[in-house]
Length: 109
Image 1 (cartoon, rainbow, N blue to C red):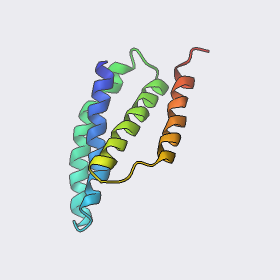
Image 2: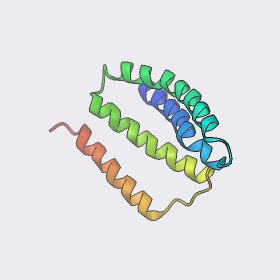
Image 3: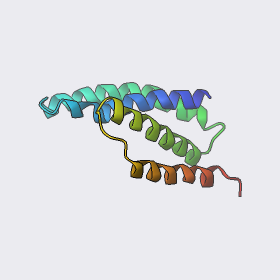
Image 4: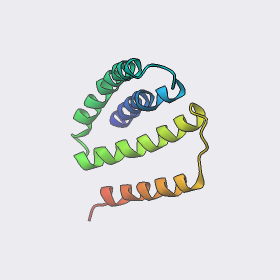
C-alpha cells in the first residue's frame, strides 16, 4: 500500500508539472519550464522511493503498470476538474483496454 500511495502522490505532482501550465498560455515558456522542473523534483522525491521499496514486492513491469493506471485516474480527474475538459466515452473505452492490460501483466501464467 505504501508504494501505491507514494506513486499516487508523485503522479499528482507530475500531472501538475506536465499539464498545469496549460491554463497559463500567456506565461513565458522559459518560466513555465523552470516551474515545471521544480514541481517535477518534488515528484521524484516520491517516485524514487516508491519504486525502490515497491520493487521488493512487484516486478518492474508491474510497478510501471500500477503507475500507468494511477496516471490515468489522476489525469482524468485533473483534466475534468482543473482544465475543465469533457471526459468522453471513447476515453473510458481506451482506458478500459489499458486496464485490461493490468490483468495480463499481473496474471500468473
